[in-house]
Length: 163
Image 1: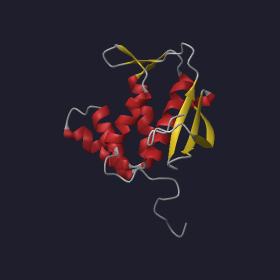
Image 2 (image 1 turned 45 degrees about the vertical axis):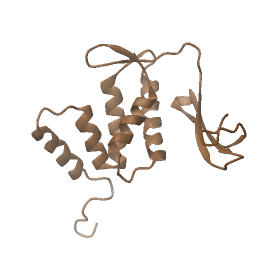
Image 3 (image 1 turned 180 degrees about the vertical axis):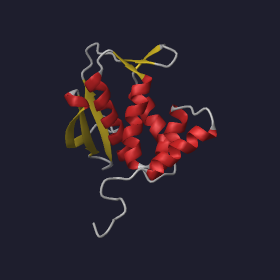
Image 4 (image 1 turned 60 degrees about the vertical axis):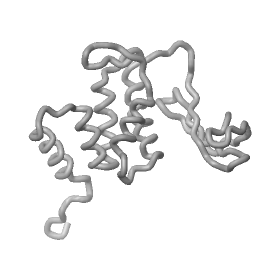
């Protein structure tokens, strides 16, 4: 595997994990020349195609990069690491591939990503939702923001009478 930084072809595998319900192997590698780390993914390539059914009923091939790109935009200048973005994408993909094998709706993908992102960063979640959900007016956006900020995580709510 060529290092994306120095282009050398000498590396070692530091960590391997199964992802996507066992359909993908994620490998962390370290270049033996420049010592930088990078991630690779191994997938079965035998004619497996998942198509995304968009709102207008058109179909496009599934592209993980579109999820990552959307998350990067939503997380711009937020305390969300590239590794967290990859984990969110991995979890969303796991839900997608566990439930669909030929076609998946863009709405399922968006909801899967938002479910994971909401747990990580509420501001990034609102940014993503504002593009994905295409709010018709400010009232819808305000409602979504108020629901996100009033959501109480288990164990973080107010203590009542010495609980």
